[in-house]
Length: 343
Image 1: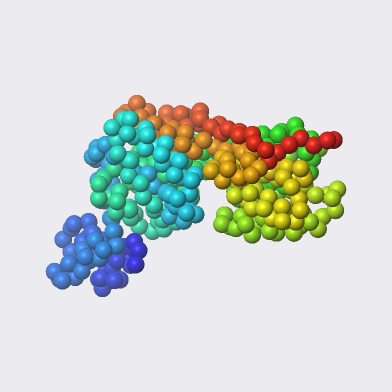
Image 2: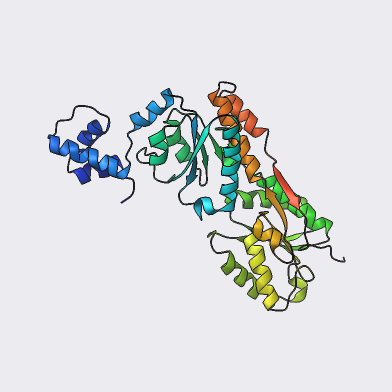
């Protein structure tokens, strides 16, 4: 069984929730020694941490920070995006004499405050949060009374220090690139609601482009989407087929494979642009052109800001201002998967 709530802890121990709360917080509880021992054993077994214990972390300085990744992130730290973020943060921490402890945490389960055992056992001075960061999760994190920064969603900007990719800027640059190569029929694949909204706003400035937005609700279904898109591509009349596709790099490579099996070539018949400059994009044939965030740099910026907050060089408002000044850390890598077409 995983981490549990106070209510679940009490139920497992066979005691009232108020009794479990007092035991968890080290207070005298109206229960037998056997029941108290049972509550304590279950706390240890499931890594339960009362809110007061988490708050006490804020009163110490241990030269350690926590790097917490949402537990529902696909592949976890094996995901190259988050591995690069962590490496960036580690480099900054090592240079400034800090330890950086990495763990995953269920950001969606917020009924009680429960820190990962790895983080709790060693105590930390602050957090870097990434993955599925939401407003509800941030409200719970604030109860820690610990400094923290986030590497995640754009919607959070203005309320916390957050370093993230700017989908409005990226979508505009992608459309400008398509136009510069004379492409007019485009498939644009995005998994983010905000990314879709920003793209729709940008389209008003590109009336000459016919852009169809492909939505991926399941981030693990790139191959399935590639098969679906290939079937549709083959069914369309040649004059209506897209000449340019933008999406996650794994999707673009899968699409290139599926189209190749049907006799269509990249970039002769279709240009492909990936959104992550990962190993797959670099070594795929033909090499995949990408527009990508510098994820290592995002990790560095987050760690630098958090350590500045811990040292007193930045307060919360100043940290937010600093994060807002670093909105464009993306870069282009031009390879063989895109080409200009004749008008």
